[in-house]
Amino acid sequence: MRFLADMGVSQRVVKWLREAGHEAVHLRDEGLQRLPDAEIFAKAIAERRVVLTFDLDFGEIAALAGNHAASVILFRLQDTSTPHVIERLSSALATTETALEGSAIVLVEERRLRIRHLPISK
Image (tube, rainbow, N blue to C red; front, side):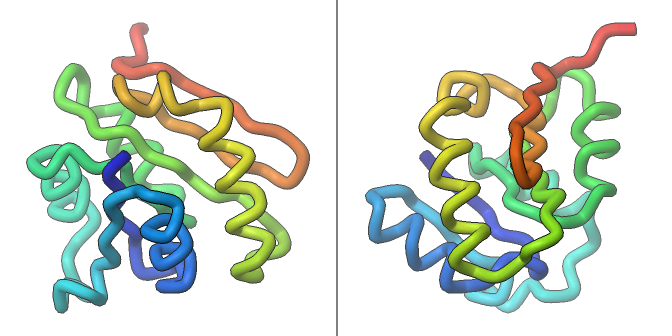
């Protein structure tokens, strides 16, 4: 899978994804630390990447994007240490890969995962 990590995600998470065989980039790798959320989302769509973020705005952006949405993995964790984020991400990827290959928001919480397929119908 292809991933784009937002600024709140550790670069060590990106390194772990690469070591696991995924194609992953961090905004910092490309000098895009100040890129607005909407442009980050547009970049993910253009490059067919899944956004990794702690920023709740991305859930709303994805939900409003209609048929032109990238998938988003949204972390809602109390323990934001890199090892814990990697552990929860590993678990999420094992069960949500098919949803992410389409368009979905995957909410990663301490003890559960929630998947919303996109577009969200009214």
